[in-house]
Length: 144
Image (cartoon, rainbow, N blue to C red; front, side, top):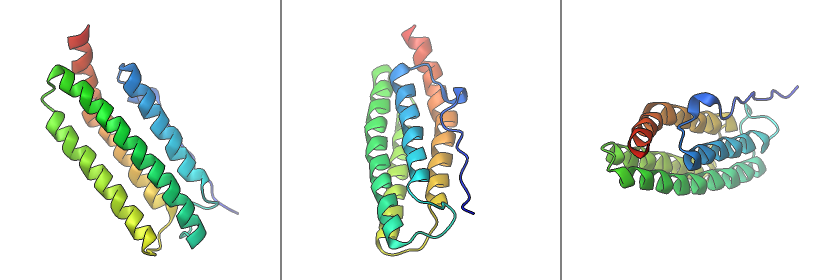
C-alpha cells in the first residue's frame, strides 16, 4: 500500500495581512502540494521518470519563489525595512539550495521526493513565521 502525505497547506498562522504576499504564499503551498502528487510514493527513492517529473515541479517552485521574493523585497524597499538585507540573504540561500537539489537529481543522486518536499515546506514555514510576519506587522503599522 502506498503511503500518502498529509498536507496542511496554507493556514491562518501564515497570514501577513498584505493581500498580494498572502496570495503568493497560498500559491506556493498549492505548488508544493503538486510536488506531493507528482509521484506515487513520496517515501521511495525516485526512479528516472519520477525524478524528471519532480524536477519539473522544482523548476516551477523555484521560478515562482523568485517572483515572490522580488515582490516581497519590493514591499520592504518601499518602507525602508531594516531586515531587507537579511531577507535577501535568506531568499538567495533558498534558491541556491533548490538549484543544488535539482542538480543532484539531474546527476542521478537517489533520494525520495519527501526530502525535497520537507525542505521546502519547512523552509517556507519557518521563513514566513520568523521573518515575513514581523515584516508584515511593521508594514501594516506604517501603511495604516
